[in-house]
Length: 426
Image (cartoon, rainbow, N blue to C red; front, top):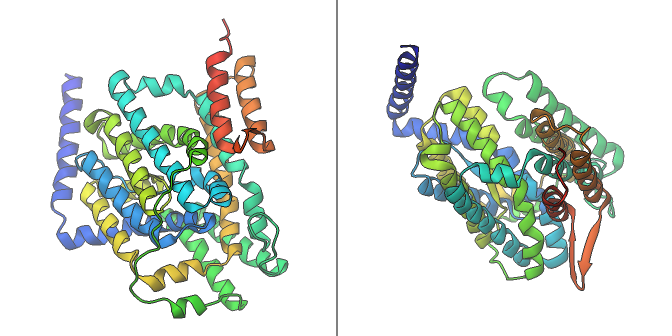
């Protein structure tokens, strides 16, 4: 009897949600979509600004990627896709080593990996990913992504270029700007209420930008010269097998995070999206969005937890809202002055916020180990985690001729190999 009551309650809740979504007018859907884009905006543009990619292209590819995702998933999942922070270090290294076009070929290949994994999930079920990539593998790899980027954040926060070779802003001024941006982000994240709690990065950027204006370090020359309407600086990929082999292993951690994001939005919406439309469809849509982004010179896409939080707060479960957010992102991409303003954000502003962001990424990896109760007293687990962390943070690299494997790519392969080869404790 209780089971039937629970089923009826779930059906009634689903009907209520569907009715609410259906009652939204077109204007309400557009406004709700712009709000979702506002929530995602800070992280969306920060990633390309850090790596040297074009922010307007990132807006365009986030919109295109989100629309492709909804086509693949038949418009059933209220999710917005945009720039993935897991790829920051590999993209920065790839651009420095092979250039943007070659790096795009690697990103395209990473998206194909998602799509191959989606086919494996369809054949063998969700457990396939968990067996191949258990928490003891994924946790330390995610930690390496965050901790490996720590020097980049600190250098930019003190007014230097990412590699520390150039002084861009006087250190005392840079510290005031970066720490103010960081403090604002921390306060908004922990103390704000409602929708503002979901946009701490955006608030931090605004405060840092205003302080930069006060100290007179902003250069608006490019903003004045930029046209109001312009086509984003699209870059076509060029095949480079070094970049492809380097970037493929990076897809490991985001693919596993995708499963967690789908579980999260399923809990928020009260529907099991792992079954309908199915994890194989959502993972394929994510991969297709990433590969499509690479065709235009944009960053790889991933599902955004901030937007999931906004969905939970606003109770707007209608996937059409995300489609409108995508359309608005595409339109903004063609406003030239908008992109020029984004490019004018000083490195110190981004450095302050990145201190929190990169630390948060590392914390996600640590939480993965804790949440799944990975026993580090077990010598097998300890070996996997220890070797992966030291390889990643220490900068270990293996190379043959002109090819070199290092960073997140190397750590992903090492963690998977150790998990498959080391004997299990009995």
